[in-house]
Length: 314
Image (cartoon, rainbow, N blue to C red; front, side, top):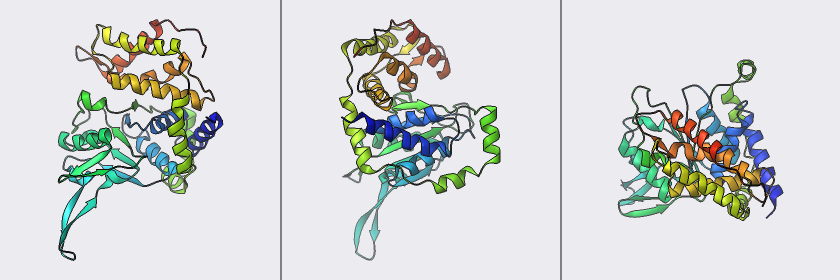
């Protein structure tokens, strides 16, 4: 395992996307982390904070086929998966692929589509294949869905069920820029023009290497126990109506391995778990009493602070 290839890979992608999105290097790195783990990303924030632009810039930096789908209430599952149509030229039915057959799919405002259409997308995310009229079509090795979502209180939205939210590897939020960063954006070239100029900065071979070798990052026994202490505590916390699933525990394990590799280490420290715990686990726990998701994340932060940290060793 060549750890230098991970740090160089991270630097190239983050630097490229940062040309379009100012001051959000950590969020860009987390999106890249999910991509390396073959996970999907849900980006939730108020309108106008750069969610779509970040994901478009990321897709262009990675190369490969990219499709953007604007989710609306009248969007049908077949608009995503594709359809069989009768060709008068050949006299046979032919399959016309939908946008889900791209490498990077941007599902813009996913919570504005109906549950039926959301389910079609989430099925493709989980199974990495699409079935149409009894035929099954595999999706690409680098297939990733990056979805944006408006806050649930926005008008005309269809909230994602908890079980479907759990299928996203990470849930992120950009937040507002600092005053100086926003002043810089006001006077620079338009973001759409910057994104149009972005070229792929990594090759498929480089992507294949990091995707197949990150599992070689060592996770010591003490660190694994620390990870499971956190997972099990979410299941026992009385203020949570449900804790982290096994899928969530596996996601946390992989995310902390990639986090360590991007930091130039071939072993995981407890800090790696703390760094990625909130984006990986925050959307997988649910508080009772109608509490907001932000309140559940604050409870998670408090919980992380209460768990004893093992000695920093391999």
